[in-house]
Amino acid sequence: MTVKPESLGMCSQRLARLDRFLADKYIATGKLPCAQVQVMRQGRLVHQSVLGSASLETGAPLREDSLVRIYSMTKPITSVAFMMLVEQGLVALDDPVHRFIPSWRNLGVYVSGGGGLPGSPGGWQTRPTEAPMRMIDLLRHTSGLTYGFQMRTNVDAAYRKGKVEPFDQERVEGDGLEAFVQALAGIPLEFSPGTAWNYSVATDVLGYLVGKISGVPFDQFLQDRIFKPLGMVDTAFHVDDSKAARFAQCYMQKADGALGVLPGRSFREPTSAPSGGGGLVSTAADYLRFCEALRCGGALGEGPDAVRLLGPKTVALMRANHLPGGADLADLSLSLFSEATYHGVGFGLGFAMTTDVARTGIAGSLGEYWWGGAASTAFWIDPVEDISVVFLTQFMPSSLYPIRRELRTLINAAVIDSKAD
Image (cartoon, rainbow, N blue to C red; front, side, top):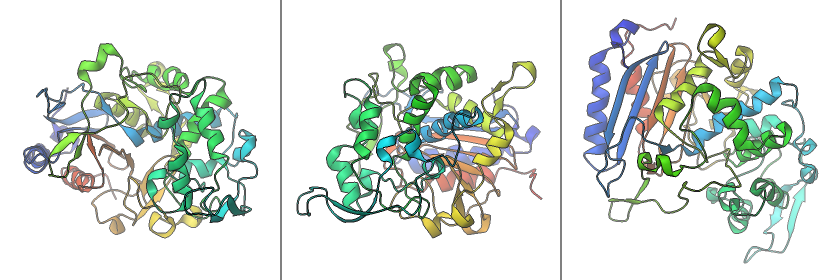
């Protein structure tokens, strides 16, 4: 239940503008099928919006407990799982990745060739990496890996040709993640690890490593070590029959501008290749519990009943800027697509964070950290103002509308008792 925003230094009237803005600009105009926002300050829910339709075809309204595809908002969860193993001493950030994936020991950096792609010379011409790929490179997207949808190079073309992504390996017999990782062993890196930033399948590799290092299947590790302890009862890699009625439809813009059902993976069947980079479905309440655990230094709750995932020093490490030389994304990014703008933004161990508020052009706080998903979902955590926000909808592509910037502007404008210096 929500509490009066003024009791926690936020303005009811300004938060109400958020509902009108979403309803008028996005729902009534048919730009988005639905929108849900939950705003929490100091651990109390101060505002919630639930607007639009879970299914335009049936007219079913979005509900507070609707399930949605969170896509890349899976990445912070996978990163936390990996850091739990770091805390146990099972792996270190500077460990070379080939310690656990031996077939990657001799991965080279692309020079020329197309690996047999049409119109390209056979084979790959590569050069040695300047330094081995390390675990930290996977966490901060400086690994040299890429995504097939980047549409920039012969390397990402090889990803597309080989269907090198967990979603495309899910029907492989046995361990689909193993097939995914071994397929990557045959494709060169786009750059030497640690020298640039590129959005990639790196977090899917982390999911594979969580299973390999822990000895527990990746999806089971998340269930046992994160979801069940935090009470994230609706977060999983598929939606079973008992919850199907709550599963919202995902849409894309058709040629005529209207919304049409997004084709592709249904998320209704279990998978043999759980995607640590984008495979989870969840609810606003579930994901807000995860955010609150991070905001509170790695634990949800207080006293003997608290559920601790990580120590506060580890969370502080994760939300520091780990880009080489303290650079921001504008300096290092080669990516044509990510879930962040680039100026005034660094990247930590699983999410982006604000390094320079003025350069972002958005009211916020130094050290605010966040990420989003391909279906236009987003979250952010403001450790200065003690605020956690989750925004859910179901629309691709996430880059079409500036809704994330608009939400942060509107919600930060509702803070009337700021804790910033």
